[in-house]
Image 1 (spheres, rainbow, N blue to C red):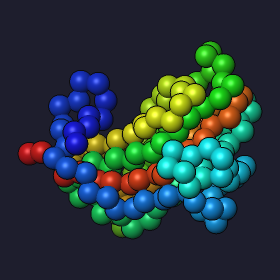
Image 2 (image 1 turned 180 degrees about the vertical axis):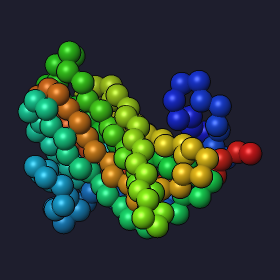
Image 3 (image 1 turned 45 degrees about the horizontal axis):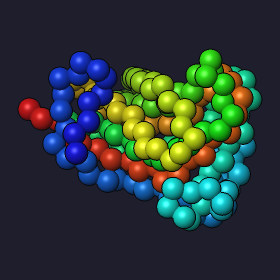
Length: 165
């Protein structure tokens, strides 16, 4: 597979290496996500999904991971999603925030991706290509909405990809 971080990005990925998979198959899989409801009727794989009812300026943490090794790698997060009853004027984003801890110094980077509304299950991904000498130790994936409606999320997969030299 080949991904690019932003349009015009010159960094290409060689391969995706899975470092974590969050399948959503029961209520325990979503217990740390605020306002999430397990939905056993809507799923991309038949095992259930996370359902969120969003109202105006909503920011929900979907995933947080510590102690990741991203040296000379891009961080790529893939997930399945679908939406319902979201107005076309509203925006829905994924935000990937990372932190590099180095001694007493902390550096933070973020990237946002606009999600297109889809009544059918669709895959989306968000990629962070690190700057030289910036190798994050942890990350947080958040969903940001400025409208109302319903969002389903299924199977969040965290991968990394060595940068082509």
